[in-house]
Image (cartoon, rainbow, N blue to C red; front, side, top):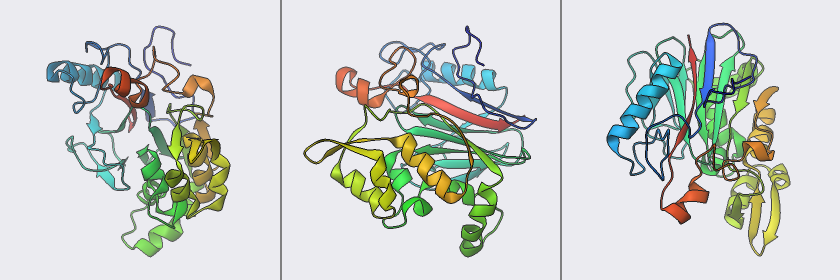
Length: 275
């Protein structure tokens, strides 16, 4: 369990020896409102010096170098090592050696952490609805979660990597972090259609709330896709109120909650690394 005085959320997750993970909240930093206080995003208008200081605090908490990606709401996955620099354009990352923490920034999107059962490989993915939906007509097979599982394999041939997903998934556990909850994520019919184009069962994760409007269960869609890919050990966010970024303003940043009211929002981060 996370100590009461620790502003970070430590995943309650049976990781193998030599692997650690953490999720930052909005507490414990130096940024002024509306970024108060541990904003880790350098692209949201916060003072650069404050962001640099916050990232330094985050790195000290990890005890290793967190690699911050330039996230594009896509499905690209970057391979990291101890020499990897910030700014790689990707929405997922994988690491097989100590010296770099796979790091994903969020403010409503779903952070997903992966770990191989033997601790040899770790990964992280930024799962907003676009990344989860992936390529049209492919369902979860064309999204960021499948792409991240493929990256666990050293295979270079796409066909082999695709066939290997099931074998990899059986050896991987996953943790879902805080995100916008199913009572707060209102979307249009085009979002529902994007998921149903590849998987009719995705309809179960959308609840009508008005003409052409639906409440979307982002973590439910992720769990559905992970299960279809063969992942059996899934922990963390279960869609309950405590995990909702919108509904917990004292603990979490939320772009949807704060952007309209304050003009912007800070960013939190999920990280996993080999010690």
